[in-house]
Length: 260
Ligand code: FES
Image (cartoon, rainbow, N blue to C red; front, side, top):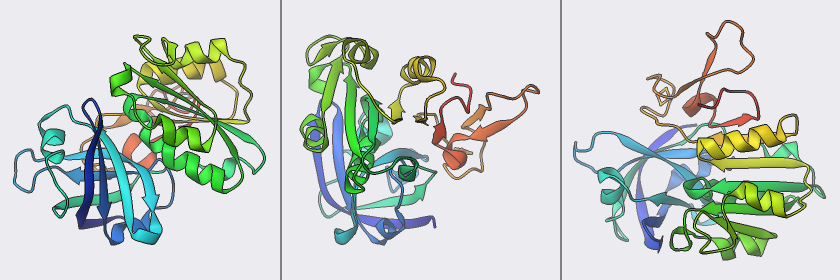
């Protein structure tokens, strides 16, 4: 069930260049189930800016009633959000969307998790849940540059972790696909989240495999009411079928929607 709640800021830390980690506490956490779901956070209690910002859930701590998001401070809204300190209250709507299906892989099998930039955070809760059910996880994380990279150690604690940076300042030089070219990685199910060009490259490479992609998309309402996030369905000869990323996704099986 979706709730709106004023949640308590437990901590806020800058963990890389322009990247913040925010932990919030409140009853809304009880409703969080699937990794890959997101929340819609109001960044300013006043009217400016009016819109909430969709931010994916990076980690859930049910026993503490807390969850963590990792976001990039890039516009006015997220800059304001990054100024919140411990003890402040933040208006949160969520949990929203359909996340990654963890029951599509068995214990003893191997999941490959590929994330790019701000698409990396939701894979952390996914990796935690998969490991908990006995599924092995391998991670490939792509960043622009070393100073914008984060959570390498946290992922390494859960499974083998490869890093790629566009400028070669950390790990493999280039993109996540370069890691795939340079290493023979065997897996049963692929889960990925990141920018559309990365998802497209993965779709070309892994079409026909069991895979789930989380789409990053501009959003308005976040609850299926405004049509700001529509995407066309791939196998549709009429061209009129669409899905809403916010309420039908953001996670879809590979090949289901046209990536634009
Ligand atoms: Fe409004 Fe998806 S953001 S319908």
